[in-house]
Image 1 (cartoon, rainbow, N blue to C red):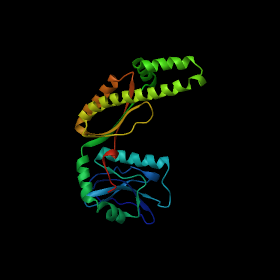
Image 2: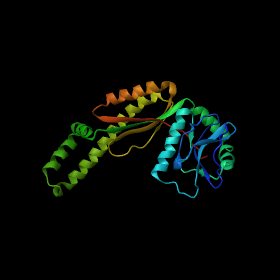
Image 3: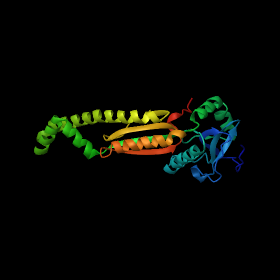
Image 4: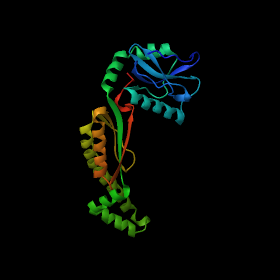
Length: 253
């Protein structure tokens, strides 16, 4: 599909991702710098792009959000290979010659693999008060040290406080490993692929990106709802998506 746009003389081409050339971009879709988004095709693949002033640095939150919003919208329409934020090529000829043509076969294969799928992210965090109550109840030494440090001045119980912190951290690590593993065992039954990310903070329980077949989306969402019910009162689950498949592509080769 050939899309006509204003002359790009003196402007660069900001690239969001790579799609099949027959994908139809909404005519009113706008991206970085509030510019209209279009396709720059080369054979059966195309770059999702918009015009950009190559002399203006792209680093603001608004630009990053616009990049992600364009990709997520395109992902609703068909498979897309996300390109790293801030990727600007000189002109359409460079988009075709430097990006699309050298990687054509690889892009075709990646788009075939992504067809009929969407990425979701499942995040789980412990309820801090509840999980600490569990840790104290399950560990006599922690309970004893907790009582002791509450009854003694901070200066005179420094060593006990350090020990208490170490024991609590270790207990939380053991508990989160077991609970996270239980969640993953359930989630992986309903997805094509998954990528486990590092959790943030002491209450972080699980952060996993998953690739889900469109035909199994309802089944997957029900499984996540079941986990939320199973861990109710102990942990809070958050389901993010569908989004572009950021965790399941590699355009750096």
